Length: 213
Image 1 (tube, rainbow, N blue to C red):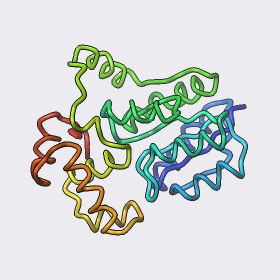
Image 2: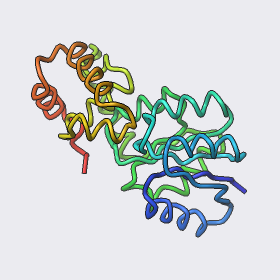
Image 3: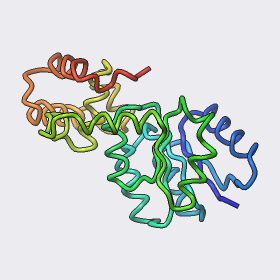
């Protein structure tokens, strides 16, 4: 029996994931969480084999959360389930300690296989993401400006490119507007961009976030 924890801030998504896994044999849902803080508490309180983790819950950056969880529970396997199909998110998640990466649009068809593979010690990447990785092998190896950003800076960059205001970003990340403004300044400096509009144009030109809803 594979014991699974589910962490997603949307009740309907958690219900759907639970329904899929309970409809298959060999899975036990050991607990659920809706944000970063409750996810950490759940991981500490429950022994499980796999954590199915949404990368964009309120509170801590998803990649930072992966690192903390792996530091505290190294044996726990983490399957990232996210709306972000961009390669940059997957690379950062795997470097942080994730064992699998699955987009929500593929979850209904691939969740059972993904959890099973990750629980057995393997690594799972959806077919669509595997194709993106393969394509990236043919891209220039020089570091691009956005690759210089830290995980938190990259997350703020994504939100700026999506048109969110400083206040909205601060509320979603549970930090002050001043902190977000500081991140914005760092992002502009690291990417050598003159203003916010340039960041948006850069994101569009490199198709970094074209899969955003």
